[in-house]
Amino acid sequence: MRRDGDKARDYARRHGVPRPYDRAGDLIQDAEVDAVYIATPPSSHAELAFRVAEAGKPCLVEKPMALNHPECLRMIGAFQSRRRPLWIAYYRRSLRRFQIVQERLRDGAIGRVTSVHVHVTAPLLTGTDRTNWRVDPSVSGAGLFFDLGSHCFDLLDFLIGRIVRVHGESTNMAGLYPAEDVTVAAFEFENGALGTGVWNFNAPEKTDVMTFIGSEGELTTPIFSDTGVIVKRGNVTTVEEVRNPPHVHQPLIQTIVDELRGSGTCPSTGESAARTSWVLDECVARYYGRA
Image (tube, rainbow, N blue to C red; front, side, top):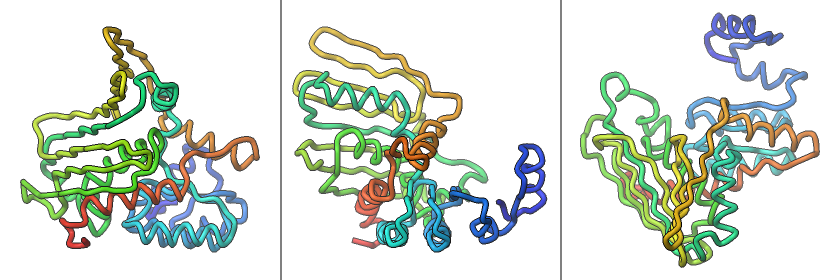
């Protein structure tokens, strides 16, 4: 389904889809549609999810889950009341790279994790990119921090556990769009480990790295780029090279298929994504006057 019916029909013709739609409601109500994937910007996630829940169908929603944490909770309630699953497209949970990181941390490759630091930077948006919905808080919930930082915090939830306390500060240094362009945060995990992060979208170059410090070593992994996992322990450095699959979302989608068929469980749920949404909200609360 897409609002441009001609483009929807063209896609359907090229990919062998029997029935294209130009209205979401028609697709949701199609009796032969078993599950729905909502891939719109965040401002319409909740509304469309409620319609899918009302139709009694399982649903996969793009990330970030919604505009804010209260919307996430209402979405969860709608699916729980109808006993239908709700998944969120944090596909990095199913990539082999982060499964390796989870295994190394769990097995004590760097001892007990005591702290983590997230560092994400990118050059300032130029030209028409400055009008992109991702930097329009009314559509995205905030700025690029919600778009990219959401993956970071979801991974931390997956790799270390729930974040129970967080304080963030945001600013708009360039003044070229209404959303924040720099955010910093400090946070605490349920297990006592501490974390910090910087998301700077007014920087000279792209950077993305997540560094875990443990009592006996250090583990470094990219978040978005396709490079290896590095473990340093004493005088020994190990690099595990792992490449992303051709379609990075496919492994997570396979877990959804497996769950629907009764042979597995998807690791990215409405509940886990709502935890990430709460952290994001806390980070930008002062900037948007929500504190």
